[in-house]
Amino acid sequence: MGPTEGGCHCGAVRYRVTGEPAATTHCHCSDCRRITGGPTLAWAIFPEDRVEMLAGEATIYESSPGVEWGFCARCGSTLTYRRASRPGLFDVTAATLDDPEVFPPEKEIWIGERLSWIRSNAEVPHFPRTAGGSVD
Image (cartoon, rainbow, N blue to C red):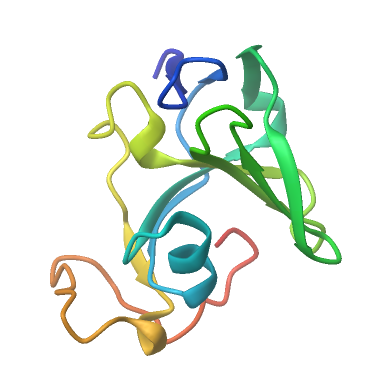
């Protein structure tokens, strides 16, 4: 797959991802909820050498040692995630892609923290926490 672009709500931060993601997830964890204000968050996870910032720069918030969330400082959009325990991987929020349909979630994670009023996709595997791999 060719390059796919995305960015924040106001357009100050733009990025490009190239190729297929290493994984795509739909996360129900409380951290994703609180960081976005939404009930869930979908991620496309790429090798970091396939993510390029085109305009602006994400402001980094370190929620705990080695866990970094990237935001637009101007509009507040949650854009990226990285953690030291997964070196070489870089997550982008799938809904900030210009075409959010291009990388649908292949699994749901942190189902153990799913809100009771959110329905899961029966078509994909579900995991109480992570899928147990190094990618999610």
